[in-house]
Length: 288
Ligand code: ADP
Ligand code: MG
Image (tube, rainbow, N blue to C red; front, side):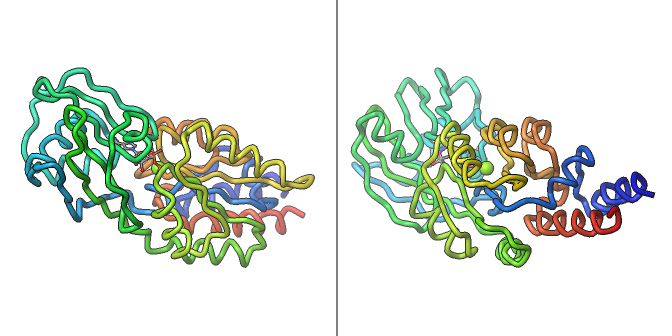
């Protein structure tokens, strides 16, 4: 019977760790031609390690790490978590005053009465602090104390084991474009994009620019074609809502992302996206 096999599709997907919030999304998965991904936590593990510290203007590595960890004391961003874990010591919340997280940029905070900025080139440019340029080795967090550049930390993030295979499978399924949208630097974005075989990479995007990217790609669709966005962060919520099918990572994902999504991948594996499309195609065959 038609409705039963349809429920079978959603049920079958849920057994595979793919929660589909309505049979209309399973149906829509058949017609996906564009798949857009966030990077951190979606295609990469998002479990960062501080791999290198470079100091400047007489700061020691310990001092740099101290100011960075204190500035990052109140954030749940994976970058903040990794810097605090590299610092390794307890942080008293009252040592950090006037804390301000600037989305897509980093942090501004008062630490021991000093003005500290920790974040990317955009943040340094905005604060008119001169910094050292850096390549694609990893995500870079620049640190400035009382407007003096103290140096940078390099943070590494690995691609998920199944990410390259997920992209390859999507191409076999006839997806026209696989695209990565990231707030991270162009150097890191391009390296990951190349490693995974993505068609396009758009980097250094602010959250609202990710929405604009989805709107742009939406304009490329012809009738009946559908677009997926896959993300995990709080920042990704407006993009998840804007896509035809918003997909969130259930394990690493923020509650807000899971709430805003139409499909949730419980195992955090990008290869579940081609699998979901395959389940949708099998289900349509049975129904028709
Ligand atoms: P993504 O698009 O990779 O999920 P975000 O939009 O969360 O990344 O952040 C984009 C960039 O902004 C990061 O790569 C980093 O350079 C900077 N950034 C964001 N939050 C922080 C933070 N808490 N500390 C330092 N840098 C940050
Ligand atoms: Mg993310």
